[in-house]
Image 1: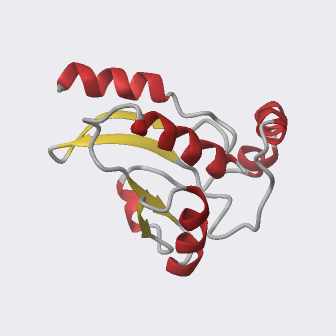
Image 2 (image 1 turned 45 degrees about the vertical axis):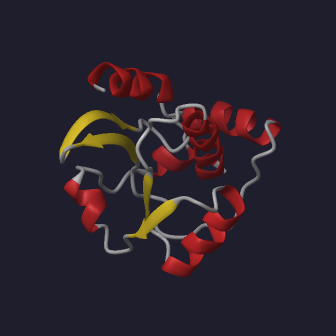
Length: 135
């Protein structure tokens, strides 16, 4: 549900920012699961399947606790996502692996957010501000 929320939110924001570079998503599911997901939520998106977590680990993301997925901090974002129409779907990949959002420019991480829990909302406004300031 949070992946749907975040992908759809970013898709709308990128559409409003014509000069924003192409987005690349990295996910832990199979290639086929990624294709099904993005066909429904952002057909033009580029995505890479990383079931061995090579890219995730390169960005310093790792295994998270059970509370990262089901803790109290996840409940309110979960309720907001549900009320916004984002339903819980079939889990693919490893739901206990932490996630993050990164803006990479010229092979350098210009902005990053390592999510505090599975329902953490990416701070896209911060990312776009960094993008605009370095443009």
